[in-house]
Length: 43
Image (cartoon, rainbow, N blue to C red):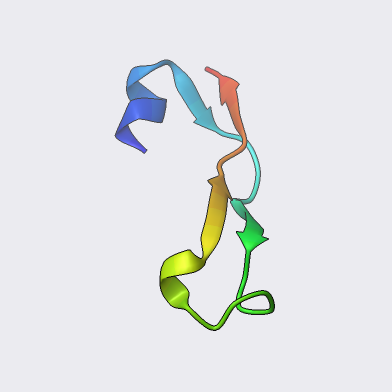
């Protein structure tokens, strides 16, 4: 969040997640891969 603010951006929408490897694909939590997306726009 600090990087976003320092770079001259503000949040512009709800945060969302993309699950590349989820609990539906593996029972091992160390194999989960989740991308966290923050929509932003220039101030």
